[in-house]
Image (cartoon, rainbow, N blue to C red; front, side, top):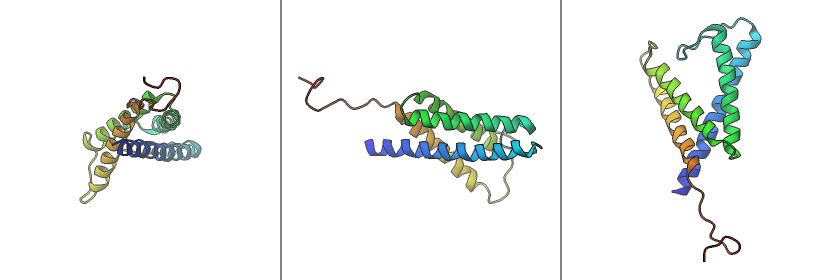
Length: 140
């Protein structure tokens, strides 16, 4: 079971790390173009607000991945993972966004991937195993 938890954690880091890099790239291209003509119907923002929200969100996501990887602040990574799931589900399934016939497979895979990433982020909070070696602090 520990192996599964570790794999889920690493999957979660990889998923959100790649998502953060992807969103950062999109935001930087939109910001440097100067037109702010980026249009992502699944997100609640438009125009310049969308560009700056993507930039801030991607930086927050990348920082939270790095801090969680180092074990500094894991709660930020869990918060980021949950926010991604909420925005993804709200934008894809609970909005006016419509799919063309045969297009539903990709959003379902994205949703399943983000849910698995939340599970991996949750597994960070598992208690560390007790020390079983000899020396200071070993059980009597």
